[in-house]
Length: 125
Image 1 (tube, rainbow, N blue to C red):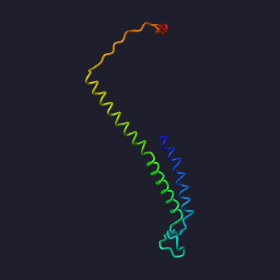
Image 2: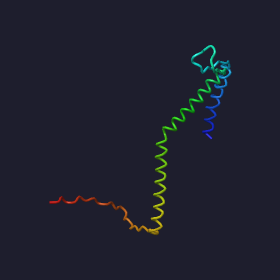
Image 3: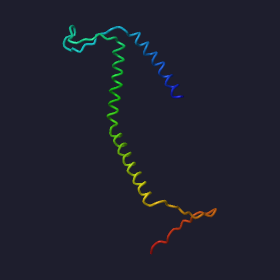
Image 4: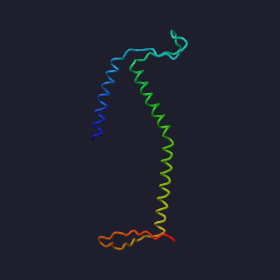
């Protein structure tokens, strides 16, 4: 519930800012992909300024996400190998438990106030 409230507190002001930005920058600009002829470009597109900027921001977020995902590939591979090894070890442990049968641990009661004594062996002569 707290996570949802925090999301609303962040997303509502962000949406208001984006709408205000779009309304303030709705004029068209010409985006040209012809570096040789600025007056008569081979391919030019009139785009609202806010659409261009928001499109570039979205493209930047996607490119950054892909770059981070590619950089983390070695950690994902390591985690996959560790999970496979853990599954193998768990299967081996189950197999060994079935092979040996139930094991009962016997303990002797420890008297109250008992503290183990540490002794130092005599030096070898």
